[in-house]
Length: 91
Image (tube, rainbow, N blue to C red):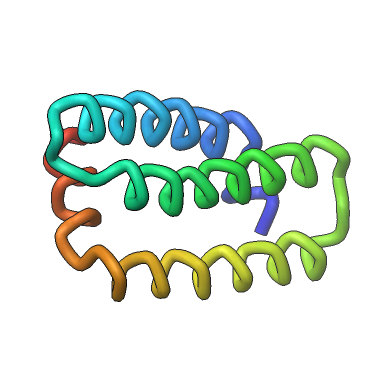
């Protein structure tokens, strides 16, 4: 897994999410509650980047990714429009 997923790739995504979520909140496109919940994804990704840098086992990284996916699905259920708004900034 770590051969495909580098800490730099994950860190770049953290930076993108940080900027995008801030822009969405500042423009009123998402609520402060949505911003705060989505921020937990940033934190989880930062942890994963750190684990990759520390050369932690793939099993541990996968466990963290699985937890992050569960969290992301919950956020997507609570704020179904958020994913598309974030992806619109990617283009």
